[in-house]
Image (cartoon, rainbow, N blue to C red):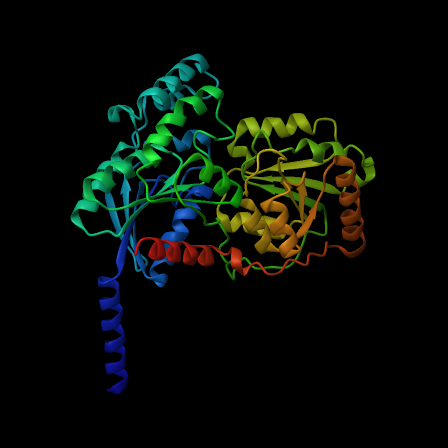
Amino acid sequence: MSQLNNVLLYVGYFIFRTLNMKKVLILAYDFPPYNSIGGQRPYSWFTYFKQFGLFPVVVSRHWDESITTSEDYIKPSTRQDVSVEEYEQGIIYRVPYRPNARDRFLVKYGLGTGKIVRKILSLWYLCVEFFIPFFDAKYGIYKTALNVCKQDEFAYIIVTGEPFVLFKYASKISQKTGVPWIADYRDGWSTNYNYSWFQQNFFSRIEAYIIRSCSYITTVSKEFQHEFSKLHNKPVYVVMNGFEPIAEAVKQDAQSSKHFSISFAGTLYPYQQIEMCADALRLCNANDLAHMTLQWIGLSFYPEQKKRICDVFSGIPVQHTFTERISQTEVIALLQQSSLLLLPASETKNQVYAKLFDYLQVKRKIFLFPSDGGSLQEIIEKTQSGLYFENYRDLHTGLMTVYHEWKQNGFVRCETHNIAQYSREKQAEKFVQILLHKNK
């Protein structure tokens, strides 16, 4: 009987604690089951916030599980009504997606047709979606989030971008409800490295106007923190992306002994200097190259990036394998089988690539090139997880050193340690502490 009373007391305390917990509304376009770095970040908040004292309510787009190509990304969602999912960790509202005219054109005719038409439509939507809701396919997230915020009491609104039109919607909801909002930058907005001169100038005034109403800013690296502190008169805090623990079913220590497997995972940006790796491999002899495999995980999702790799490494007799966008579990399994992990960077465009945290947790040697002289180098040095190189000749020397180690032992040693601080759970805890401290 006493055991039953203890259970009832525990359940009663759990219900009481949940009912009296502060709620946070999270606006996130990317969210599982869509497997992207942008989706994993808010999903970690949804997963861990409650255990640190905040109850998360997420409003996102409805994603189908079959997003494997860039065309799948813009197809209409199979479900065309707002759905509500309740979990122990929190609540998720999923809003149907209806593509705009440009995306319908692309789905119907494919990437090889009507490039001029698509460019004209892209320019049109760029110019009007911030001002005319009818032309914004994300407007349904705003309407749903506003209704949710009016029906319940929220302590904070967090919006993670991009798409940065969600910042505008968070600002509007905040104005209508009085709930303070926090702008979370995964990348720059008007300062985005991938934007054209026109886009950067077009968005600079819009960004300045919208951000002035937020309480403060969070972002993924100290480099962005410094940049946004200069750009906006707002406090800026760093909450890194981090990693999830490897599932027991996926854990394994064996590297491939058949091939010296060199892997890269995720997106490859134009400014990441992958050419250094190609130049280093050109210094290798054909016999050594015959034992090497370059594995590009998820790069088939980006045809232009795949073409860039094929062009850059043209004439080098080394085997390449490409995968489509695959589950996080499959990514981790492939990384664990690897002998070496590539982290091409930029000396001038600094950022902390989210793939670094997946690299850390699988404990495989990381090669950073060239060094950013900033957060990437600092994390690698602190965790002793790899090496960094300033030119392709030094990179070639490093490659041959670990290749001969693999050839002799069947694996490459890695001394990665002290990585717990970079887990998504720890970063979520840090975010909650910022929220609770700054909003007292």
